[in-house]
Image (cartoon, rainbow, N blue to C red; front, side, top):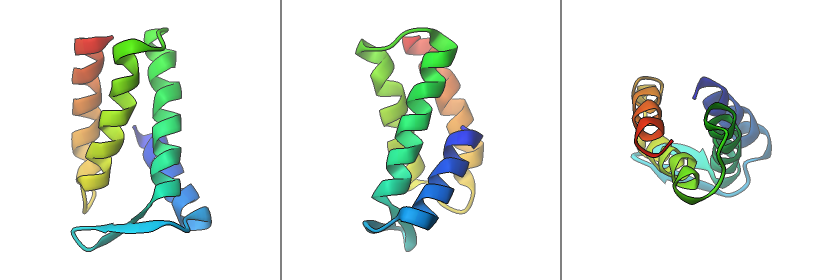
Amino acid sequence: MGISDALASIVGGKYGKHGFKIFGHKKSLEGSGAFLISSLIIVFFFTGKLGGNIIFIPVILTLVESFLILGLDNLILPMVGAYLIQLYG
């Protein structure tokens, strides 16, 4: 998730034109899209599966990341990701 988070920050900072605020913190659709795509690639790499329930994992992680602020995503996302891969992978 560190890779996805870093890509979201880079893409959002450089190309983020469609911003939104969550709890007073700025995010962008472009950054969230980068997070979603990179998470999808990572989940596919670790599970070897694509489709069905596997698609939900990056979507849920992207939604969770959008609502976490102050670095909490670095603590929470790995646990949520591991749980979801155990559940659906």
